[in-house]
Amino acid sequence: MVEFRVERQTLAEAVAWAARTLPSRPALPVLAGMLIEAGDDGVSVAGFDYEVSAKAGVAAMVAESGRVLVPGRLLAEIVRNLPPQPVDISLKGTEVVVRCGTAEFGLQTMPVEDYPTLPEPPGVAGTIPGELFTAAVAQVSPAAGRDDTLPMLTGVRIDFEGDTMWLACTDRYRIAARELTWSPADPEFKAGIVVPARTLADTAKAIRSGDEVTINLAGGSGTDTLIGIESGGRRMTTRLLDDQYINYRTRLTGTWTSVARVRTATFVEAIKRVALVTERNTPLRLAFSADEVQIRAASGDAARANESQSAQLTGDEIDIAFSPQYLLDGLAGIDTKYARLQCTTPTKPALLSAIPDPEGGEEEEAPESDEDTGFRYLLMPIRLNA
Image (cartoon, rainbow, N blue to C red; front, side):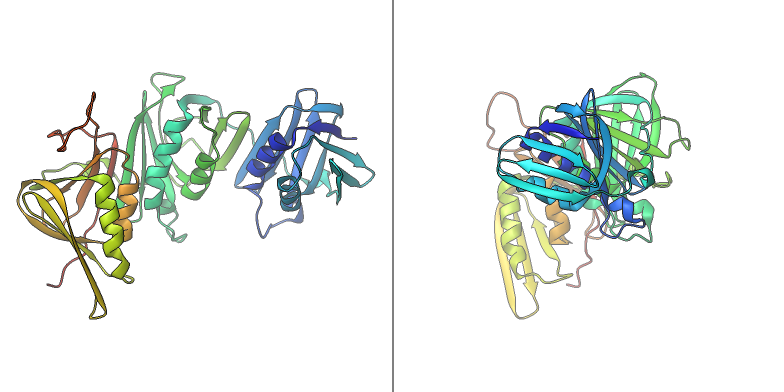
């Protein structure tokens, strides 16, 4: 038997978390189910597709302990649309009854005995503030590849070395990387893994503000097959990809002959306006001179756009072109007032980074500083024909 009462909002958040892993085309019918377990410590809901698992625990008034399997996507839709009142869930024969206010639903159970055992996450490797982890994943994940025939490129590379963590993604045309500080359980902890980018991005988006993130990982190169991430009573596990990856850190440094500093917000707005005339594979040109940047694009003879913005340039003037969307993806990871673009020639990769905001007030010009916020975005330019 299963019988319990739970707050609707609490249940809705937990079910939404677990439903993220439910496959649209399950290899086995039971994998379309959501596992509900009620016990003395409350209620948990879980989903699993043999690659990724998601489980969330909630406080509930449990009258009867037990476990039951119900159609997951249907339960998620029902709970999401319930009125804001306590929800009563009980097992009556082969039917799970969901009552909320005057609404009542009956769901036929699925064979819970056929449901696979959820994987247990590895031991605790360390913790990191949720906002920091979420922001870092959001900064790098847009650069992950989408081609499943190259699985390494569809992942987020995470390197751990003591209290430093690096996250990086690349699709061969760009590299997005973020360096940050975390709190390892073992000060000597060291590991390098590749996590499926879509799974990690979905997980990071669902982390609630103020929650601390616990990372579960065995540690040690070549010994890990699973990572676990826990936050606020929720947890996920996912299988890791092959840990072979490019040496991205060596590519994020260099000697630059042109260093441009721009005001981030106005630069982004101008790029979006000029990019309105671009079509697929149409480059956006940036011509930097001493105190301004000319932003230009044209779509054959059909349309053109040109806009100038103030900029500060150190070094050689340069005319360089990029994919507008790739450029905007990099700028989206910058949350400071000024951004820095470092170049050598129009045919070699350029490095985009954030200039830390000065303490204690506004500055009319970008500070002359080599420091950054730990986020770096290396972007291949598009060769110009003229």
